[in-house]
Length: 345
Image (cartoon, one colour):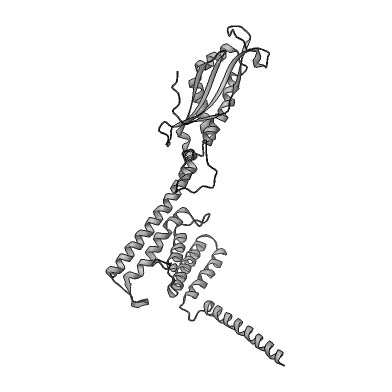
């Protein structure tokens, strides 16, 4: 009998807990009166459903009212249940309402949360917090007033602080966009900056400079490799103009998506060596750099005369005036040099 009483008591206890939970949920979901924040939230949900079933300008109008109902209902609920961010006088409700207004004003159908949405969110939240201070009363009895001096100081400090936060967020997005359009800036340690957060590994050599030389080398080699030696020497005389033109085409073709493409240029350097020539292909960075002298990348190609019909550099022709002599080209790996490029000879 005692066991039965314990079981019944436990069951009644469980029912009591369920009843309390149901009562709390009911208080939240069921509006106490028609004019309440729950009604506005339900209207926003209803508008969303109707908007999804509509077309054209009717869909846009219904969606507009849906957003207005959602913003008004959220602002009402958070005002009735104020919760302040610790160590500040900023209500959580103003932050939530500010986010909704920012999304509504600056969001796009293809991308609801945009850069402008995030940047203006803190400032809009501060404005929402400040607006009630300029009105006295509630409902239809409210009238405009000038806040007290102490409240004005709080409003100014809060608004100024949120505007500074917006500026820092904007600065982050601007800097991040710079590094997307000008990735070569990472070479100078920009990703170690306190303002830049990148998940990429440390950049030791500019990838766009490497791309330029990797794409340029086959075109240069194609024009001179296994060509008659006299023709190659004539090509080397005109190399500054030829290589520069090829370089511009390579840059336009492979760096079209980067704004930094205008800050790269290609130049050749030609040196006489024991049995032939050395052609240095340089991709030169003319943009900002932590090194005052700048930097460039170099790919050196050795051009030697060999007897026609051989594929071995051991048969280098020592007398380049002999007939039936062609050029053999071998290129080294790319080297990154933090200095000004050598002068053209």
